[in-house]
Every structure is written in structure tokens, then in C-alpha cells.
Amino acid sequence: KYTDEREERKRLYNEIIELKGNIRVFCRCRPLSSEEIAKGYSCVVDFDPAQDMELQITCSDSSKKQFKFDHVFGPKDDQDAVFAETLPIVKSVLDGYNVCIFAYGQTGAGKTFTMEGTPENRGVNYRTLEELFRISDQRSSTTRYEFYFSMLEVYNEKIRDLLAGTSDQLLKRLDIKQAADGTQDVPGLVEAQVSSIDEVWEILKNGGRNRSVGSTSANELSSRSHSLVRVTIRSENFVDGQKNRSKLWLVDLAGSERVGKVEVEGERLRESQFINKSLSALGDVISSLASKHPHIPYRNSKLTHLLQSSLGGDCKTLMFAQISPSSADLGETVCSLNFASRVRGIENGPVRKLTDPSESFKLKQMAEKLLQEEKEIA
Ligand code: ADP
Ligand code: MG
Image 1 (cartoon, rainbow, N blue to C red):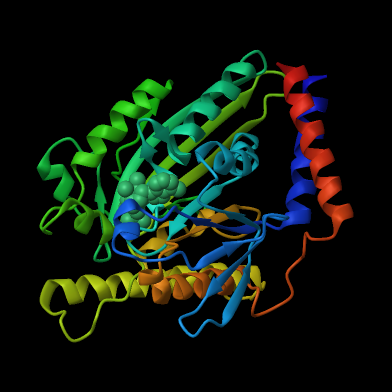
Image 2: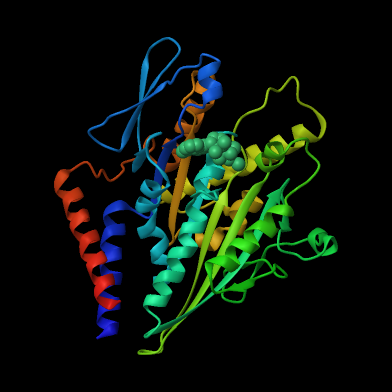
């Protein structure tokens, strides 16, 4: 009976994914800060209250630009609202799918707020782990899950293990190797087995302390490197003996802002070149996948190479395009929105539209059925 239910759940997930596609782009716009208001900056982003897939930018010449995504979150949408839309994707990792979630955008646009959040306002990382533990508890009569947690950073095309105990280990050069099963692996990367959200929280705090040093301020340093959390899930079903292994990547990307070419030199210039290279490599990979291009250029950066086995195929990818509403950030905001649209394939090719009310309705129905089934199994 349990096997049947699991099969049914899988079938429903697949149908939802089939309707929505494996690659999704959500856009999230943070509120205007009190500092921005004090400086007299205005809000240049408008939302359509009737639906949650479009936004409009007012350019400096008063012309309007419209952008469309799989979901748009405005300043009034809180962490609960964001996680509610993210949940179906992260849950599928318990059914054996690989999942990658990215936050993209200029420094200050809310990437870390969305992924990490604050202790009062936890973000996607914390809520995801909490939910995975909750579901694994619910299913404990039929399935045993094991969770392994890693934290790393890609800085100037070098991989650093943020969970390595001593500074010696921290400096140890990590590289990407192809494992026997053809998937990518990082030999030597610390994997901490975790079984509760409290353990995860402790690890997150310690890992944060090991992030790149050398830059001048805290925000500065975190904005120059990609910060990655990897959760490996192993499961065994007692009823049918089926074993699964899947990976979830939660990625807070380096700031996407272009730095002025004139004033930047030395180390900072090098950093920027590495960041530009890896972000455009990521954009190229996702858009090649979205347009079903036969060649996917994973090898163009450490970031995409690292994530190779979790991007493409039946893996699920979600990108948060984070934007600022401020008139002062208009240029970067338009760049980020263009990047996100390109990634989604909205400019390059046909994208399945979910605006058809009958499709949306069907999806809602399926999601409700799925929730109901989860309850019944519990
Ligand atoms: P990034 O990581 O992209 O550089 P942060 O996540 O650090 O940006 O966000 C910059 C500031 O804006 C932080 O003080 C953060 O708390 C605040 N912020 C970002 N997004 C939101 C939001 N949706 N609601 C409220 N505050 C936000
Ligand atoms: Mg940040």
C-alpha cells in the first residue's frame, strides 16, 4: 500500500513538473530601505495585484519595461510566502531528485535574506532542512533517511571547504573529480551527518566563520564569493527495499554587479573577472538546458562543473532573481531581470505559459491532492 502511495505521489510530482518545467525562475523584490527613502530614492518596480507572474520597471525616461517569471514576489511577500512556493521543489529531493536552488542578484538585493534569512526571519536553507526532517519523521515507518551536510565556497575559481576543522585543512586544495558512477564529486570535502535542525544551525554558524577573509567589510567579502550548502540524502525503503541517493544544493551567488572598469584594479579586478566568468557560465548552462541545446557547457567554470550532476536531466533548478526597488539601482535591476529572462529562455524560445487558467487550476488541484496524501500517509 505504501509503495502505491509513493508511486502516486511521484506521478503527481512529475505531472506538476511536466506542466511547469524543470527550470524555474522566481523574481523577488525587497522593500525600499529606510536609508533609501531618506535619500529620496523612489520605487521603480510595480506589481500587478491581480496576478503574481509579472512586474513592470519604470525607466529613467519614464518608459516601461515588463518582465514575466514563474512567480514574482514583491516587498509585501514574507519568508512564509516565498517558502510556500519553494516547498514542492525541495520536497522532491526526498523522492530521489537532485535539486539546485540559486539566489542571483547585485549585492544588497536580498540574496542572503532569501537563502539564509535572519534568526527572526529564517530563509529557504533553514526552512528546507526543517521540512526535510519533518517529512522524514513522518515517513519513518516505511523509509529511513540519512542526511549529510557540507558547506563550501567558490572564490576566484577555487573551492574551499567551510567545514574543514583547522586552517590547514581549510587551505587544502579541493578539486572536482568524476566518480565511478559518472557523477561529479569533491574528494575530501567534509560531510557532516545531521539528524536535527539544531545540529544544522550549529554547523551553519561555524561554517559562516570560515568564509573568505582579506576584504575590507563583512558584506564586501560575502559578495565576492559563491557560498554553497550541499545536502546529500540517502534513503532506504523497508517495504520494497529501494535505495535512493539525491543531492540538494542551496547557493548564495556572488554579487552580480559590474564594477566600474576605471577605478578597479589589482585583486578586486581579478575577483570581478572570476565572478563575471562564473555567473555567465551559469547563465549559459541553464539557458542551454532550458532550450534543450545538445551541448551543455558545464566545464566553463568551477561553479557549473561542481553542480554538473545536479543541473539538467530530470534535476530541478530554481533561481531567485533578487532585485532592489530603488531608483538608484535601476541599471543593475534591469541587468538582473534581463539575465533571469535569458536563463528562463523567455527571450530565446517558447516557454510553456501557465497563464492559461485551466492549467493553473489543474496544478492547484494536484497540489491539494498531494498535500492530502501526505497527511493520509502521516
Ligand atoms: P545580498 O545578500 O543580496 O547582498 P542581503 O540579503 O544582505 O543582500 O540584503 C540586504 C539588506 O536588505 C539586508 O539588511 C536584508 O535584511 C534586507 N532585506 C533583503 N530582502 C529583504 C526582504 N524581502 N524583506 C526585508 N528586508 C530585506
Ligand atoms: Mg549576501
